[in-house]
Image (tube, rainbow, N blue to C red; front, side, top):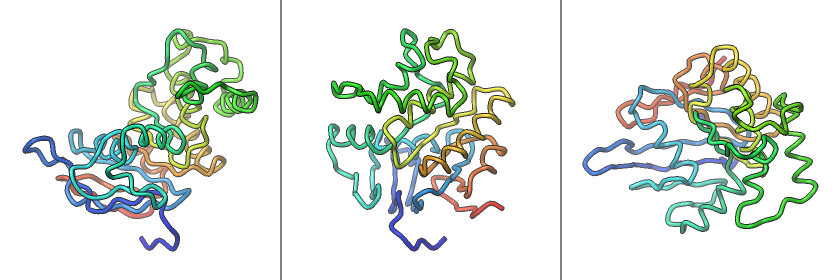
Amino acid sequence: MTQTAQPIVELRKVSKRFGRLEVLRDVNLLLAAGESLAITGPSGSGKSTLLNIIGALDCPTGGQVLLDGQDLTGLGDSRLAEIRRRRIGLVFQLHHLLPQCTALENVLVPAMAFGRRVDAPTRDRAEQLLRQVGLADRTRHRPGQLSGGERQRVALARALINRPELLLADEPTGSLDRADAEALADLLMELNRTEGVSLIVVTHSPDLARRMGRVCRLRDGLLLDDGTIG
């Protein structure tokens, strides 16, 4: 796939080893701004490891990771944490919501990182995101009062509160039933369009993968580009 502008994500010969085990080898990837991509592959193939490296949660053993042209390789923990907070949204299979906090408070958590106070526009955005994901009447509910699909939608709103350039989702529908999985897939694609956020989804679900603009497969540590869908 030919890119005509600077990609939002670029991987150059990325490798990852755990002792003698080579999980990733010579992985190259270009992701354009606003593009949606699914990464598929069997369990244990390194999909989550690759997503963690793209999301600055883990460091490669070799190669380079660039976010909008900035090389993340070798940056310190505090700088990487700031990049994650400002520029990357993360959604996991398990929502990791704070059980003592309401849906609205959970969405606001990333905005309060490093001791920052929440201002009125940020609170308005949190409420708007909850409306957008269909939870306008659940803002004061705690996670224990929400369904699995609702909790995952709160997690999605939380990932978007700081207006990230890149949204990374690791098996976001893996713990949901079919109806909730389809609803979350619809939301991901809607937010990809309306927020203009670039999207990478790791998934075992063929249905979710087909919703993305492009699919890559991990096999034997290599990333294989299956091309554009449709």
